[in-house]
Image 1: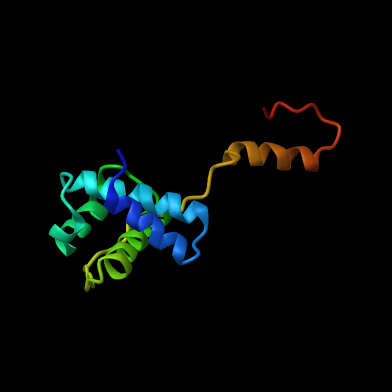
Image 2: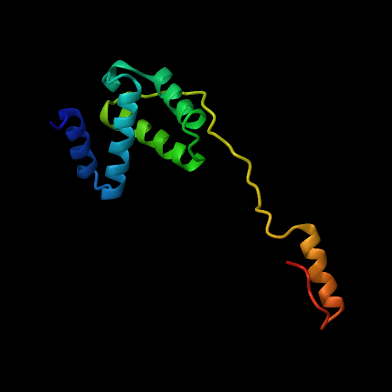
Length: 127
């Protein structure tokens, strides 16, 4: 059985001319949020639960920062455009994983290659 609330959101998204992929993404995140808050209606919950949900995504589900942003944008859409309610300042910091360049070659491997450049024709035992 389809939820009348979810179907009303789907209708609103389509009336606004959103992309079908955006519709699917938003509906998925809204459903996840509803399950997170114990199947309570989003009108019954607010900023506190939204902040807890986003923190849970970052801390327990280890989602990427961009995925967390999509979830945040979805909930802002839900509250502002569907429920006509401002979330206010969530005091929320997005998850941040430091960027790390992959190790491609070990320093000893780089040195071996450089040694081969200095001695062309010598047999290589680099790898």
